[in-house]
Length: 122
Image 1 (cartoon, rainbow, N blue to C red):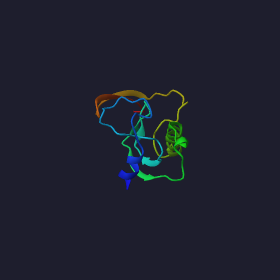
Image 2: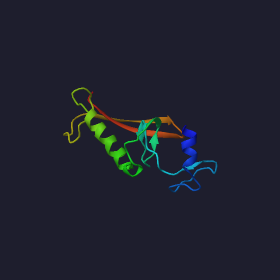
Image 3: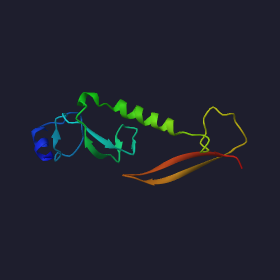
Image 4: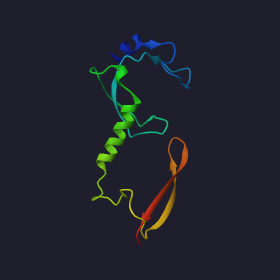
């Protein structure tokens, strides 16, 4: 069923600027689907995206990156509960906390290093 639907939507050229191999088959942006993802990268790509279902109640024009980025931040802020974690709330006065840092080797699609700052009261 999907193959038949996709064949009707094949496009000769990408619907956006893309630097990908020639073997990629492009589809006209006519279908909308829901995906789950871990996070949005700085260059606005979805990390670990997985298909969930088709959405018949939305038009492709209604789907923008703005709604993804905004929802990411909204969800993050609603999950912050300072009574449960020791995450700093910001705008706190300077105290006698010891400031340490960690450089973590991170093996993702490419090797990179995460720089983490931490303030702890010893």
